[in-house]
Amino acid sequence: MKKSRKAFTLVELLVVVAIIALLVSILLPSLGRAKDLTRETICLTRLGGQMRAIHMYSAQYNGSIPTGPEDPLSSTFPYPGMPDDPCRQYGTNRLWIGMLRTYDGSGVLIRNEMTSAECFFGPGDNSSDPDEELAKLNDQRAEDAYGSYLYRQMDQAESANIDSPGCNDDGMDVRAILMDLNSEMPGQPTRRNHSGRRVNIGFIDAHAEGFDNSEDTFTLRAEDVMNPFGRIDEILKYADSL
Image 1 (cartoon, one colour):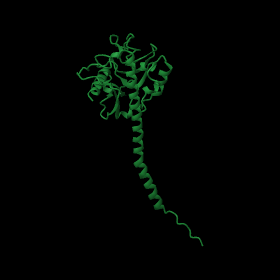
Image 2 (cartoon, rainbow, N blue to C red):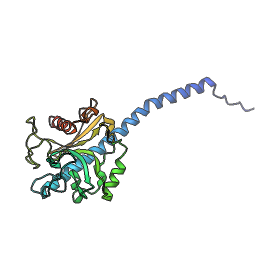
Image 3 (cartoon, helix red, strand yellow):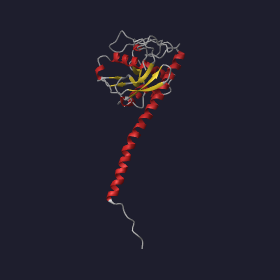
């Protein structure tokens, strides 16, 4: 006569379920962090690629980095409300000027040095608009297109020459060229790369490195809405000090 197999008791099943739930609770944060690290690594790779493209560009233009609109030989065009100041003196994440149908800032690299416009958009960008901004850029629409990275241009620099950019207003050597843009200013899309906790920075020697941003050291905050360009200056100077 066959012996009947003993079934799990309710208590045993509850214990198994509890163990599985515990393991899931332990593993999920690790999996989430692994995804974050992957996005940060891809972002660093894209920043490094842009820095190498900037060096390639400068080799063709007597050492000048790209400045908008178009190239160092083109005329300047002011930001709205700033008729006396050329665009190239302000750090920006604008890549395309829709009204002029021309590239701006690091967007100039799309013409020759960058193989894909997608490289201007970070995988850790959790704003609501990266896909739409990429479409504007690819389609060359009559609307401005903005990327995930803040590009320095000549902001807080004495020249646009990659070998001798000079010093910022605090007397420090210009080092930082590109970085993740984090912005919480009202009136525009909120942009938080890597949830705002980290910021990747591309330096003038073409390497890229990640830094802590848990205290919003590199963030355009809500209180900066009246002076965003001054805040960008602060961010650039802090990045130069690293």
